[in-house]
Image (cartoon, rainbow, N blue to C red; front, top):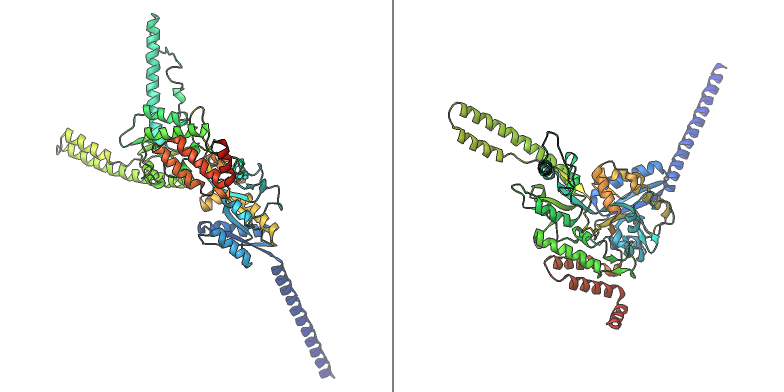
Length: 524
């Protein structure tokens, strides 16, 4: 009897164990199925880009975006191909893991849009506006009154100066200014038959328009290129300084601001073939100012290069140059490098001086020899310069300058079946996540959302805000090559009027074709 009860108990335990096991297995299977279903329901957006230096930024952006949007995952794909747009087109046509959103420069947006590779931002219409972006950024992504991209980062140029030299010049101006004022005071008082007493002081606007006590470097930075010429006339250059102002005259990117305010190629958005005005009175005046600078600063266009100019600038051979945003990090590294080198050279000098002091005290050398060796040792002390940044000066009091800018944008592929998700990611990267851009890539965000506190980054953003974006007109795609030739010819002294007229006729013929030729014949 007892054995039968024990057998029943064992059987019941076995049944219950089997039931619990089956229930657990089913539950795990259901969880696995739910997990698989959730995985396959997640939208996958492919991001295309061409610069490996941005891999870390785009990867971290994808992770941050997925944390906020668990139903969307973004996979960055590096497309290393000289024919970047063509590769995107081929991938899109094939339909296999092609980029739903990709990075492109603003001047190629028309080409991408007409090829069916870029779509209008109709999914999110409250992102690309003046709350998030400056006018130049909005113009950069606008084509035929449509927004077809999200501005990510930009490049433009600013004035860079040797702050050490200008600090020294300010101190000299303070001393000389005080002396001039004191001399004027003495002359005025003596002319009036008065007695000069301590504390007598007079100021005259015709001496200098400066408050010498509070004079700073910012006060003496030239406001126009005519002022730079005036500064060069007055500046007493220390030994080793070859000139006041030099820049890369061989690259149109560092020259375009001379004509940028008046040379119109497609209007503000660079997309209007009816708005091209290259050959006009103001452009001719601007390019004459440009040409005259060569007579003053004598820069050889054939040997000029951006890197060589920067190298000479960092060595203290001139005071002002024009540079793009890459110079920010170069300046910081160079300043630190020079600081360390100067400390080492000062330590060497101190060691040499002590040794010479001992020799002088022991009578091993006389005073003249001592002074000579000290002077030689001082000449070997490494200089340590600091540098500053400023907006591009105007050309003259009447002629304004305007920098050129190129904007890299995220545009959504018109082939994409995940347009909303792709737009969301593009908006996220170019606004909320843009604050991480400079630290990871060294590129300055187009968006105000980056909220920079660094004054240099803000200065570049200000220059960008007023810049003119690269035009998008496909028919004028060779404009920059032709413009560079025109700038070089004018720089070397050839006829400004002729070269601007020839450039205008060539571009107008390319854009308008036979219509322009016929209209030109009728006018003539």
